[in-house]
Length: 398
Image (cartoon, rainbow, N blue to C red):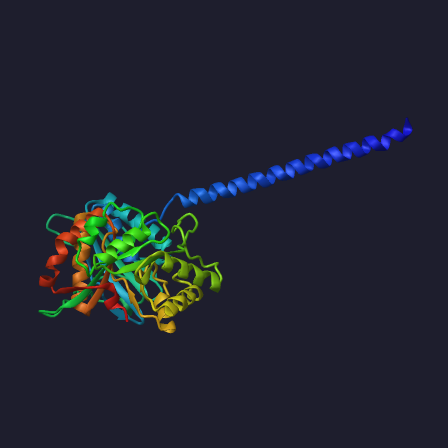
C-alpha cells in the first residue's frame, strides 16, 4: 500500500493546477468582457458638440443667470498692454443671489480653462470684481446688481499694478460703407438625412462639413456637392477628457504614430466624397499638439487640401503647423449656434457680419441643425444689404 501515496499527491497537484487554469481563464474572460463593454459604451455616445472659448462660456453663464444681452457690455476686441490683451466686461445681474451664483460659475469656468484668478478690492455688497488671466490674455470682470435707472459704470479694476489698469475703449466700428467677405460652414453632417433638403436649398456659398464613417456620410456629401455646395471633412480629433468625451469613429488621437495619423487622415478623406478641405471636430487636445498637427498637415499637403481651424481651444497650434507645411489655412471667428436658439443665432450672425466688415473677412461655423438652417434660410439673402458678401469657405483660406 505504501507505493500508492505518490500517486495521490500527484493527483491532488494536478487538480490544483486545473483549478488555477480555470481561474486564469475566467479572469481573462472577465477582463476581455469588461473591455468590450467599455468600448461599446464609448461607441454609442456619438459625436458631441464643439468646445468653446472662455468668452463664449461667459456669455452662456451670464444668460443662465438672467443677464440680458443688453445688460452685458464688453470692449472686444480691445487693448494690448505689456503684451497682454485686456478685455473689460460688465454684467448687470438681476439680484444679489444671481450675482453670487454667476461669480461661482465664473470661478468654476476659470479653473476649467486653467485661468489665474485675482479679486478686486471691493468684493462685498452688491458688486464683485474679478480678473481672469490666461497666457497673453486677461478678462477684467465687474458683476453688479442692477437698480432701476442705474447702469453699471466705472473703469475695470485689477489687482495688478496701477499701470495695468486700462480705460475702457469703445468697441471699434466699421467704416461707413465698409464691406467684408463672410463664409459659413455647417458642421456635423452625416448622421441623419432629415435636414438635407433644407440644407441643399441654402445659398451655394454655404459649405457643409461631413463626419466620416457615419450612416449617411457619402449620401449627404454627394447631395450637397450636386447642389453646388462645398464639401469639407469634419475630422474627429481627440479632445481633453478623452475617452469620456468621445469624438466618434475615425478619431485622430495624439498617441498615434506618424504613419497612423497620416493613414487616419487618408482614410477619412477617402470616406467623404468631393472634399475640398478639412476642419476639426472637437480636438482640444489634438490641435494643441504640434507633433500631431504637423503630421496631419503633411497628409493634407500631399492631397492638395486646405484646412480651417475650428479653434476649440486657445492653445491650438493648427495654424502654425499648416503654415509650416505650406497648407492654406483659415480660422473660425464666430460660432453661430452654441445656443440652439433663434435669437442667440441671430446675435451671433450679426457678430459675424460686424467682424467681416471690420476686418475684411470672417468665417462663421454652425451646425446642420434645424433652427440654424432656418435662421440662415431667412437671413442670408439679406446679408449683402448689411455689408457682408457671402463666399465659399475655401475663399477665406490663404
